[in-house]
Length: 371
Image 1: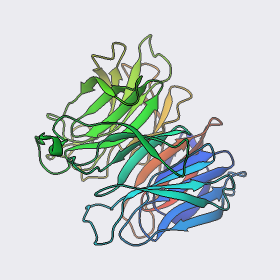
Image 2: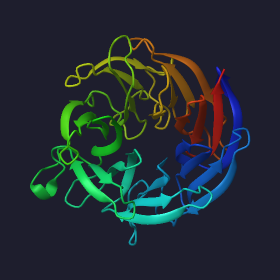
Image 3: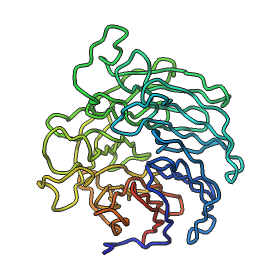
Image 4: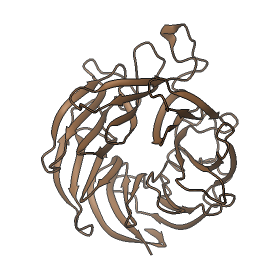
């Protein structure tokens, strides 16, 4: 039975499960988890009645679960899906499309990578901040691509965690997929980089050709889950600069309660300090299966209420007005999709108008609004 408080369902769109949803103007772009479903484009000029207007299919053995659209360009990752066993003909990379007419996307080029491909990325309309595998490096690193000429992407700069550059004589200090560049967000002259079990880093990109580390925060061990997203607030809270850090409920290093949302003070960004956390009441000390807890906050911030995709616990809206005491003010836990035993709320996009586009990794997308 649906559990909803403080939110209202505007509509539901039935579709294969998705990894990311992105809204640009009157169109919604859904990046799916599993082949043959690749990317779906919806007309959402009437949010009560979303209508599919285009779809890009993909071959078996790949998933294109992330999408971003800016400046009439659509970027879609190509990655070997977990457990990352490469097929004989697999090719990872970044597919770049012209979407001046979203009803008729046209591929401009495909930028190839080594290994398992590109996992996540940010895009500002010119530069893409991506997490590819690169020859000579242990797992994914951080890279900046210039798409001024989208038919000819050009690497501008790269950064990696010390130990990843094996071709340069460095030695990884851990086991399988622990130090792994997972997600990058650009805000101004900084990149906020989630580096999986290696924590998160803030990079200075005043000189994009030479990103340099400003600071790093790592809390695993003793905490057990990988760092998924580092999201800076665009305004001060209680007079302080605040970073929200979401861990992902996968790949935990030992039995533990589900992960939560960290609130980190970065007023002195060389010394990031956790000052509070948010966890769903009742889960603080309960060992739960993976895909139960925290995953991904909405990266679009217009106020202090932050919608967060919380896997089996649906969508949680967390108010961080008081950064020392974040609190839940609304939630939506949908029914499990047909064929599954619980929800898999994976991503949420928040519009300026306050609509929340919420995708399930297994099936379906809800459009919600605050009440």
